[in-house]
Length: 163
Image 1 (cartoon, rainbow, N blue to C red):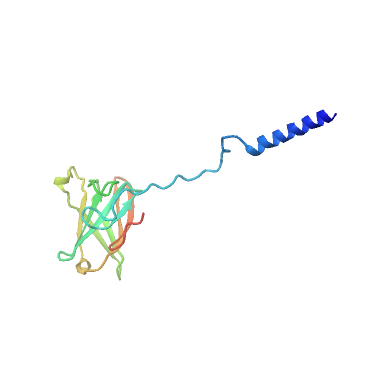
Image 2 (cartoon, rainbow, N blue to C red):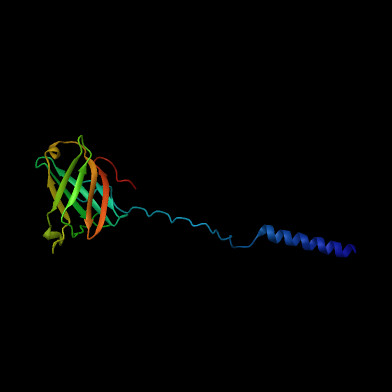
């Protein structure tokens, strides 16, 4: 009888060790975990030295530049790398500046043939306004449509691009 009791005790001890030790595989977690956000692989400013806004989770970047003497804003449409010009089929972009009072400027296409813009597509848009003659750090929103898809993004001069 002692032998059976000892065997049962040993069997119980081994069973507990196996259960406590588990196996090599971790249990599956059934909760869905969001994938980590991609690291941005681009500079904080565009190729023309201006800040940019993101459109569509890095699908496009739109770079804001200003010529204070001409009182003109130029927005360049760039690809996911924030370096390569990307011509889009858009008749206009809207630039909303956070000034007092706020200003809305319509930017018209100004195609760059040397960048491959053609067939009604443009990677550069230009507009003018008296307020652009002021030498201040502008911030605002750039919006537009690419095909039938609307895009909008914020920018701020003098600030690093939010990563």
